[in-house]
Image 1 (cartoon, rainbow over the protein chains, first blue to last red):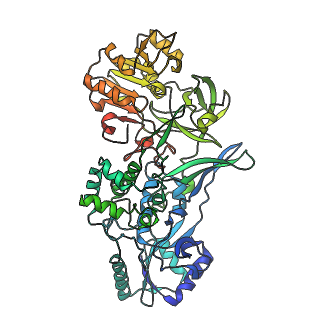
Image 2: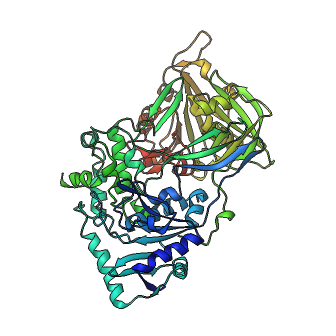
Image 3: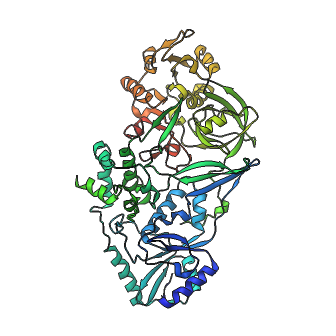
Length: 342
Length: 280
């Protein structure tokens, strides 16, 4: 695979040519913050974003995704994936996509996610601005991002684009690229390394050490109820998390009352009813009844449970949960550092 | 990312298959017993203890354990308790209607591990439904197993399920059947008391394999009895109920600590789940 260079002045023409050929999604401004959205013009792209409100997962697994449609004749497929480019993803979000790729593919291969994923070419981009709660430099450092097709880094006078796959290589055709020089490649590496120095928050321990100690704290009910004492059980920490993927499934009728769809909706394990079952005659059993038990489940999912499958923690240090939490209790750095210090 | 496997060639794990209701019988005021056959005429191949997602379009799906043995290939049984929107809609259906099923899903009972052994099944309330699959299996292949002891408890006599089966088991010599109710009525002449009051009625050896299925509170007490007999907890199997929304290990609702009941279970050895605080 090649590493190429494009001048800053030529980036707009490159993006315009790509937009002409295929739908392109990237970070765009939404009032004072950023979201991944379909680009209407190259000027909308904001490679200087810090973090987006929602992670890019919504492009493969939308907040409401139809699993099938039905009418009187029975069910039919609802899957209509579209070839597209997802441009400008920070490396922590690429790591999160790698994780959901593993989790949706394992055991029962979920084509409803995988088809959208397979039809997406991902171009990662360097982090120009760091968000206020980020800690991506100190979490899961043993795991490198994989699931991207190219990596774009802003350097003096232009951008270095490192193709990682054939699909990434194919993007070169849209712009006035030339082979990057050794100096440009070195500068790109320095730029990416420097971003890691700018995280405002930091885990003080390694993955295995954290997993062992957090697991050992499982039965410390006082700890978890104290950590969760201000929890509203709103699930915002789940909704904004790039590695959360739990869902609920619901059928809805169309207005004809004869056809409809079976849809999955993002769900959140912090909400009160998530693990509740009906036993009949009005009786219920909630297997995670208290906010503390639910809070613990989330931290265990992020720091312990999935590590063997993923090779690292199910947290990428984006800091979205910390910023989204109304009570400001969700921050994994504070929770984990407190457990590690105890 | 594996691009080899193109999406159009892959089956959608959420796509159900049509089944026809051969028979529907109101078993108790809240439970309906359905006998189903696949519309395409093929047998449903499964292991006792596995589940299906049973669905009705416009309402949704619910996880249900098979209540009949795979040795009886012409049809399969499911018992639905009316508890929510989906189950209530399904329980309005009758013979000839269609339902939609996805499965079999999950891990059932370890039949190879049970073969040649004495087997005790302890079922409480609706817990008789998923264990009936194993009960029928053992009865259909009786010489493959050692002694077969069955305990069944319900709150009241009117809540007993599969009354024809119970009548048959009471007089049978290929199963040592004992039953109890928490509270009797005018017609009840049998044992009154919680499920554990049946243990003194029979001699059990520590080599017995025990299968336990009942309401959440049930397990602690039954396992205590089994501990006293000396049955190792690796040889005690529990069939757990959770909100298995997707049935394929994705949606997260049925998780007990790091286990997904729908794919790692619903049958677990007690040793496997006893230290998981969220299990019971």
